[in-house]
Picture 1 (cartoon, rainbow, N blue to C red):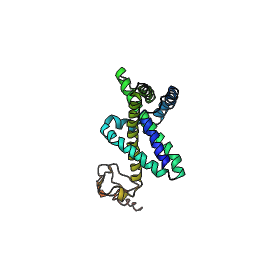
Picture 2 (picture 1 turned 60 degrees about the vertical axis):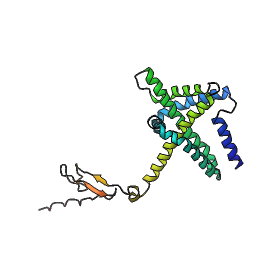
Picture 3 (picture 1 turned 90 degrees about the vertical axis):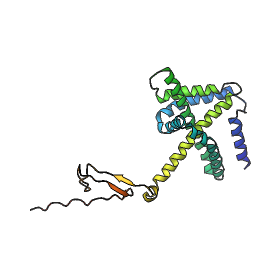
Picture 4 (picture 1 turned 30 degrees about the vertical axis):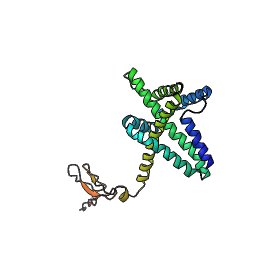
Length: 229
């Protein structure tokens, strides 16, 4: 338990900017982000785009998720620290979620800045690179830079956590039985083109199928083959 308390104590000091500033460490992290960040933003849009879209379209939800993301991090850390595998995976998962959120925010900032300068749509890698430079420069502002940079990183982490939880819940729902997954829903299907192999009506004679659970459509029997004379 003492190790967990020390871990969160160190994290709190870093978040509040209470640790000594090292320009060498700042330069190392900045170069690392500029090398890996634009490439990641370009090749993994399905990871970076959802948090960026959430920050841009629903900032209130991100604000709500800021304390929830910390509570989730604490709960998961305490839960996984009791196992060796969990203790090894927890820093990796937290780093990946934090990196996705940071790059999402950086890309969003870069897109807004480049859009103000040019009417052309910037590619994801360029927007991410510009955003990373701007966010890292915030860290150099005296007195308030550390806290402001940590707050921005926290916003990105909260957005990425919200998207990760939503994705995990959607993954879980897709593996539920259809009768549970679609309980209370009415499936309406129309087959205007027909399907000769399945006995569907031909074009113009399609009919709706109402009230069926997905996978249990009211299929018609295949047409009988004409008797050969």
